[in-house]
Amino acid sequence: MLTAPNEVRSRLLDVNSFQSLSDKTIQLAMSLGASDVELSVQIETGLFVSVRDLKAETIEYQQSDELVIGVYNGHRVGMVSISDLSWPNIESNVERAYTMSQYTDNDKCVGLVDKD
View 1: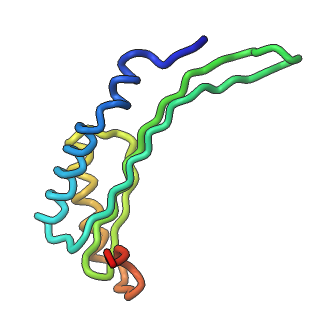
View 2: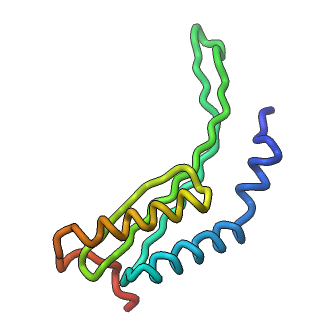
């Protein structure tokens, strides 16, 4: 039986660190002047198995992280997708998304869904 390495399992179970990272990211975007912020975190782990002649030829462990950041400036949005979840990289990409939002067209259909 194959299992994920311990460091991967503990990283995946640490929801508090993702909550803290999300809070910091939202605060940064709002401090730049964003009207809204949208975050999507995707964490994938798994196995890739290739089979030849009904026998497993290779078994590879896969792991990937992705953070999608949407920074809204009224009815304009800048979106970035990153896989390096270090704070310096997140910070620079939030700034990039905010800058992008300043130069996109104003679209009345762009924005977060109302809470109601």
